Length: 447
Image (cartoon, rainbow, N blue to C red; front, side):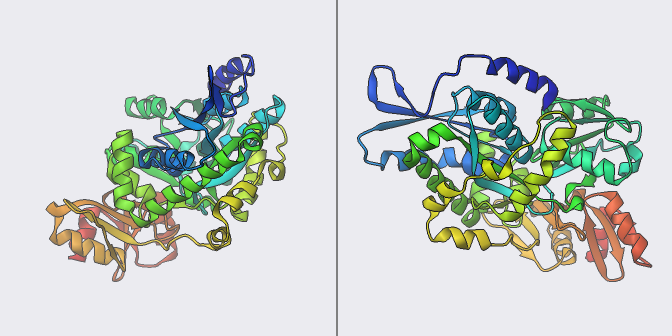
């Protein structure tokens, strides 16, 4: 996001640190305002932001506290995590949600400025890293990371998407600082740059890659799940706020759990709600947040995610965005454990739903799953006009993608989808007789 964003944040941080902490309204000590910072279009945080807000769960929980206080929730929407951190360390936001790399910056800035924050829950995650994707323009000749040498790549420095780019380039033997020309841009700016041809590729986080692919404005070059490193978003709270108003934070976490359960029980309705609130296509929201979506939602702070957070520190240090970060001190699961009670252990042990091929028929509030991509294609071939969206999991990584945007491989009787061309080519190289075919041919073979 962020050398420019960090600089802007630094200016904000010079402002007087006025305590918010669920601040009382002027002249009315019985009214408290709780300020929540969220990112409406970063749809991996919806259970702590967009969806939570639309359900009204937090307000209901606060009104039910029965402590003689009137609570108001001030929802503040931002495009990235950096301004949320700036406002938190200035004492102006009580609770915020953001991605794993911004969370580390949140921890570092909080400690540096004497306003410590803590990771108190998780929103959505992908244990392989599939939430971040590198895309190119639809007519690009680039087909692999190796093709990026000497090219311009837009990303948001300090974001998880930048972390994916750095690690992917390193694994491909490319120096992330010297091997490519990195453009530090916010997601919307990078998307415009890709469309204008002023950048060769774009590395971004949910939901930008899926949105651009759905709109026909981009195609995948690299599936972040190939890194096999967890990526996630989570909730951070100011330490002073948590200590001053633990019942309020507990109410937030209970409301988040309710929103999570609603999303998991009603994935189509949840996608429609988020789409209405954000202006994003519901089909794109469902790609990430659906029943078999790229993201898994659960507030439990899993050990795998904490371990991944520790590995992320070195990437931020190399970019000179943070020094050392004490991740163990930053993570504080006491509040979510109390909020969820005995159910916490069950959530902690829960595994992501297995990947599956899925069709969303038009004029339907339900989707249909299939045992294989071939069965899905057969269904589509017979009902093309009745399909709103179709999703298939990458045969190697399990990352869900739009069926008509996937790279298809024919291997005997099997029709296998892949997010990116390099992954498909790697499969073909290891399987004699397999070959890449157009989507239209895959449909014809299935029917």
